[in-house]
Picture 1 (cartoon, helix red, strand yellow):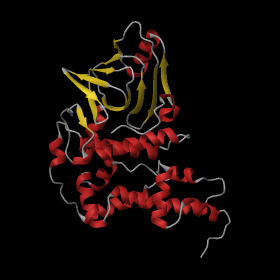
Picture 2 (cartoon, rainbow, N blue to C red; picture 1 turned 30 degrees about the vertical axis):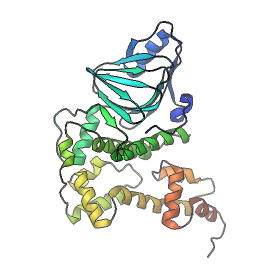
Picture 3 (cartoon, one colour; picture 1 turned 135 degrees about the horizontal axis):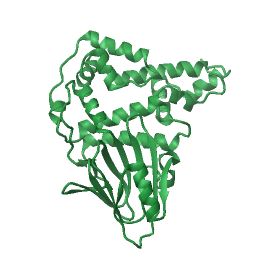
Picture 4 (tube, helix red, strand yellow; picture 1 turned 90 degrees about the vertical axis):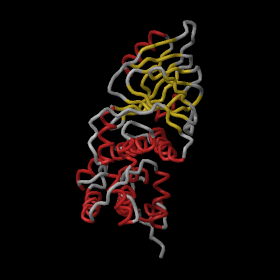
Length: 333
């Protein structure tokens, strides 16, 4: 599905410009410097209006790109995976002898040497990260070592129900980058990115799909309790898949399955409940200079609007109401 963020590229990803160019020479230099790429095809008479924004994530980067002219951009072989999502127009990626269209219903996963063909009106969102980060995440999720190369089927269908979570998480990352003006806390960025990677691995077709298709084992009750204790003690830090796997000595698929059966929620949902409780305590205790958005971010909620809805659902009152009462107004009986 297409992203719903503001189509103005200059404001996308929180106005974090990486580069812009209006001449062939400027564009060639920018592509080499920022992306390690080069121009493959470009009409001589084309009026270039290139612009790219970027936000750094804990493991990778999130890019928005548009060039305003038909252009082919060549990326060399290397330890980098790219996942492209269309925002507007027509584009395609050449992976070996295969050409994969990037449309509102199809994303593209590419690795190594590729050429991305941009139509004049093509705009895209790209998440890119080292391939070894994907291998580590897959090993933690599955509980099995991933020693062989992890290779993906290039086309990723977005019109299937299982892709909804992936695009929803991507939208959260985009909106967080576009709407939050201060530096995004590490806890928000890291957990959004790891959720995106987890959804990508479970949604896409790849060489290690069998690791995720088999039935996960149950874990012992003490492992569930240890996961709870770790989350409660580290609520203000990123709760990563790798950390939970190491603490409990189990795969995340096994832990998630047993945790949900025993507690009625996933570890991620449990962490959200703990953080909502911490946010309420902060709202009741903080001084008048604190805002709801600041507390939401400190507690790991990247979307203040979603935080407010979750808070009201959990406690029957909005964060703003609690904050007002904490500043001296008496809470009604």
